[in-house]
Length: 118
Image (tube, rainbow, N blue to C red; front, side, top):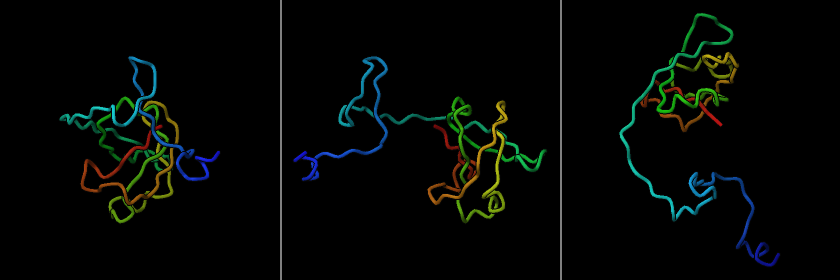
């Protein structure tokens, strides 16, 4: 308890680096990062309240579509301002997910629409 009161240990929620070979968590210092050239895949999401209208999302990880729980756009991106607060259907699954605005979205990358996955 003394270390906690001094602020030397704490409890928080954060991503954990997981080693699938060892089956254990690993420290950030042990992680080896590498830069890879990726490919963008373009996927159409249908607006839930406007059947037949699709918004294209560019992603490097199409395998995460089943884990999509939301879609984000930049709040100042005029192309998508009318979408904020509405819902889209996840392709193949039909699940409705909310669309929200977030300043972290880069409107210049891909289509300017980001899927948020668990």
